[in-house]
Image (cartoon, rainbow, N blue to C red):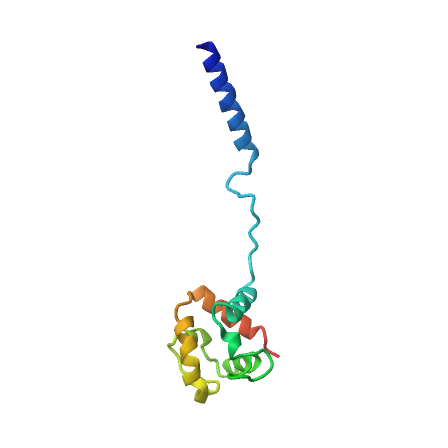
Length: 126
């Protein structure tokens, strides 16, 4: 009986010591926090597929990102509302029918994601 108690105590002591060596409340994996602009760029080029029609400095199918940023800033437009499908197109309104397909994607984004896209777009102001 003494041997079982000693073995159990040794196992508990070893396991407690091992756990106490790990930082409390932290994982060993590093979590890199993205800036809103970096997250916005990732969303713009990835999940949002905005890059299919918009480039930084040139008009492709839709206006350039720099042009969008300038016009929204100059007109005090609400880019997040537009991406939610709640605002009117103030940049290249004749291209709005083309944009409607992508608005179905951006409407599903969280407010944080939409604000990140907005931050990325504004980061391209000249």
